[in-house]
Length: 141
Image 1 (cartoon, one colour):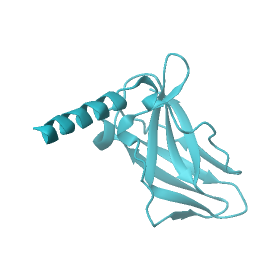
Image 2 (cartoon, helix red, strand yellow; image 1 turned 30 degrees about the vertical axis):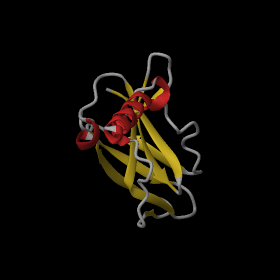
Image 3 (tube, one colour; image 1 turned 180 degrees about the horizontal axis):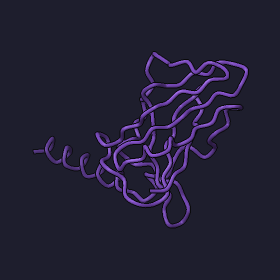
């Protein structure tokens, strides 16, 4: 009986903690700080469940992209970016990286449907990790 009560209390605590208002505020206060690296939405690729982005490395050095991690965010009515909870995973990092050579561009499709479904209208951004720093592209749907 005691174990059940303890388990119920733990679940209730977790549920209440996960539903707090600030839980979705982005952790990325500074984005696009990797010099010479930019990200843009590829024309005519935005769908409710995915989009293709062009990462351009105009620097003189190779940069490294985490091929797995991405974050999908939406700007709320107060102008604050909020991360879609489906793409918030604390331990995304993998042991592999993808190189973006100096002076080149690559395309990266980001498919968020499996993690958080389709997006609705509003101002959104996708954040990718390059050289362990967030690179973001904002777009409207």
